[in-house]
Length: 337
Image 1 (cartoon, rainbow, N blue to C red):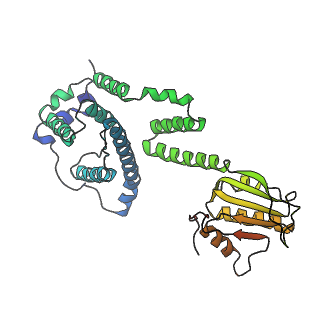
Image 2 (image 1 turned 135 degrees about the vertical axis):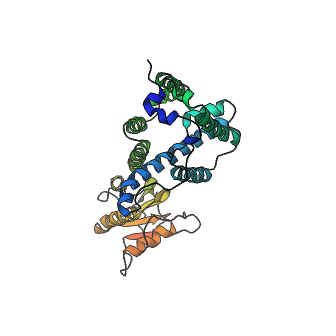
Image 3 (image 1 turned 60 degrees about the horizontal axis):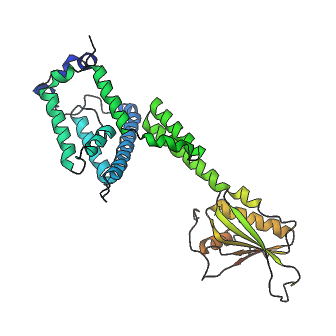
């Protein structure tokens, strides 16, 4: 005979009647620090998985409904938290949004009303109380078939075509997150995917900084030699800890003329590592008796560069040319002392 749900979960689970109704009360466990150490890792994992899956489901349903409205992530997390606390006090198992059931609900036309979800919960509870023996006689194989059909109808098969069109790094992260999610859990998969995506983004940005080089003819003065033009480096891209090495390779202090201009109009200085790289570059020109002119730095960046020299005067080989009308305005990710 086919194995049924009652065979797997036990006949007592499907005995039905008022006996299956939950009883409110605290779990019969010792309330101690040792108990907290045992349950805390599992509680954090379940909370993370539940929140992530519910928010992803909410995002997907917002796109499917396409009614111009967006679900409240705050209400979703808050309501799920209250429900899981109540579930624990009644001897139940915590849960989260069901992706497959939610999609079927929306596709059936019930996703536009809050009553659809409430009706599902009430009918499910009614079935467990009044028709539990009948549910217990359902073959496991039939339930597996239903779940496979749910997977087949809810999976976005068109997304497989994107694997050959998106960057290889993104495709590798998708495969990695999927494998870790199946092997371990969703929380670990999302965490690993976030870390890999952040590292990949930092790597891409670290190689994106470039410079457009040109000669600048300055008006002759008593201190400027008209016969020797200045060289201008117009930077493009972000300058942060990951791109400082690439930034240094853009310049040639030994072969550059007496004066060079570094234009930050299309660049952005992000952190203290970027400030250090600018200072180090200026010092490499200063050792050779050459002068660096820094243009279109933000006010905060210029202030922090001057602060790095402490009580000493700003070196003569590093000149910040400020222009309040055209200089950008942004802050740096630097901890103030």
